[in-house]
Length: 383
Image 1 (tube, helix red, strand yellow):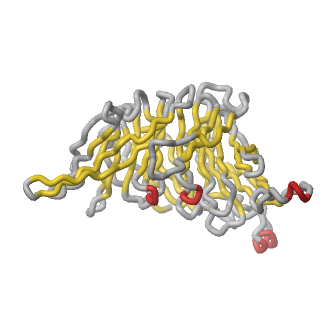
Image 2 (cartoon, one colour):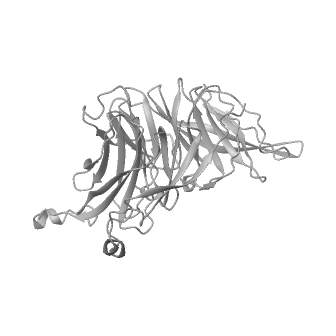
Image 3 (tube, one colour):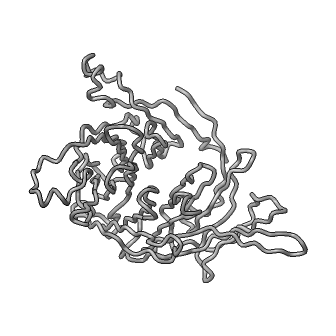
């Protein structure tokens, strides 16, 4: 089994780091913490990540990186202002087509949109470039803590989904990408009380990345339920598409794999029961026979439904798993837990002993077995 080298990055956070996200190009990192701040890290020319900004909430709603063209652009000099009034749970990058945008959510019942802008000034024939993170909008529709937030894929436009402890998923969209102060509420998904009967409500969500698929979300609840919702253009609302295999306890994270030329979908979920699962969904035609008038309102996408082919548990060796994430092609799954280790998983098509040669040749039941191909171990004992 392969092992990888790691780079230890001092977080400079004063509390637990709750989330960490790479940007589209993998050259910037955003981290959020219980200390109410969000920090942005840049990859320098030496391949080292260093802190460049702290996003915080203040009366001016601005966080400065103080970048000067004549100085080191990776200076750790920061302006400290809070991003939220309490712990920040999640952070998400928008596609760079819309600029340098970040979304954050926290226990203060709100989500925030941040944009990095450049301010150029000239002093004594010296040009100074200050990059400022400016709070563009504050979304405060939730009645309780906002536990998760994620930008939609680029082809859906500048859209954002939030999940909160009140059992609701809210979808916002910036109709005018130039006016980032205005994010009207485009839809709401209210989960059943049996799904969010505990205090945490909606704990995680992830967008479907398929370019030729209807808008879809996988949602994890505090009761252990994993649900897939699709947007119906005909009904103009979000509808429950399928219920996946549940966890015995609350869901900690879900991730919808990017679909690169596959005829099926992959969704991963991890829960408080210590289990990590991969759900495989296939597309099936809708067996209903609508009238001619109704069929005229159906699109090719809406005439297809999703069916769960399998839900496979990963052999995590009883270690607790907290987060899961797919690579850009949806072929490698990364999981992390409380053991100071990140495990990389790939589908093992021929390991499953229950498949006969004919099934393998026909590709049936492929991907029922997953194996750990690499472990990235951090030095948790390092002072």
